Image 1 (tube, helix red, strand yellow):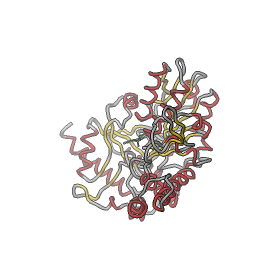
Image 2 (cartoon, protein in one colour):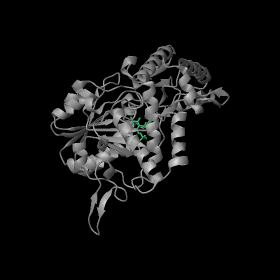
Image 3 (cartoon, protein in one colour):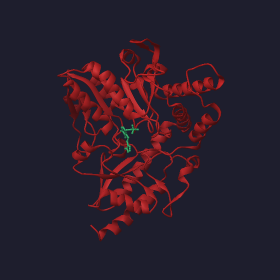
Image 4 (cartoon, helix red, strand yellow):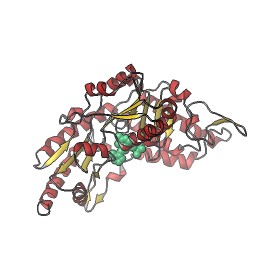
Length: 409
Ligand code: 7TS
């Protein structure tokens, strides 16, 4: 387990909610922010605030250095070969839409196939639905195994020579399933398709290496990995990005503007129209420093231990159903569950009365809810600052809720 000292870096955790110490188990929605990130953003606004890439005055140069410095931190974090492959976006949603609108519209035509899975977040479904509608392509879903994992047989059975794009979540935000991205990428490539990875729930928890995965695009968000909201990343292989058109046009992304024709800046800036998310990128850079100092391997190990501990304790609660892989080593620190017939919103409300924050609802994964044959679930998601005591509080909260609802349901 990681040291509980880590909690001292997160000011928000040291407060009471409804008369109880806060137990934050909703990092899957967004993580809390350490002082290092808050300070980096404050430092930028207090000492460097200026627009970037204008190169005349000192503050502008400082801001540019910090912004581009953050890009280099991201490059190293995901092991991209060049900063040309690292585009700052608003988050995973924007990154995935950029691939669909730019690469997708130029390369997908009627009769082609786009392949995703039943466990995707809406952000990795709707851009492809729209692309399929506009181009006449077919959207296909890879089916899941009963325990919510993907089998490579099903992957092979779904991807064909007509497939142009395969887009799969690395870690499911509902089931916690960790998917075999490297193997799926290989299968996609054997059929001449490109591989897009939704890394929103992976980047906070596991070491990413785009060269080892060989994926063509990777999308993730800063706010789930200790960084601020409003910043995310689209990684893309340089050869593909070079051929792609921007989807936003205006200042910052241009080289030359004439009356009727314009040319674009080189990568990565041609995809960053308008004043960029400077403070956000700097905050994300600080978050990466923070995570790397602790070590992604250590963080992953910590979460596996918490998940195993929680699953063991939760399985002992009669009437509690856990969805997803039963083997904790096959899942990240995300546990989705229902308690008897109690509506997850009611359950989350009672837990909140006890200071415990969990998410309830469809988790932006309605096709997966349909696959699970439920309308909603409750979800506890862990991060590096959670402890076994947090899990004990959850278990106690669940037992209280069970008693409370015994009379109601
Ligand atoms: N993909 C996955 C797997 C996600 O979990 C999320 C956000 C997104 C994409 C979208 O990320 P965004 O930063 O662009 O919004 N997931 C959740 C969640 O599980 N609860 O709240 C947000």
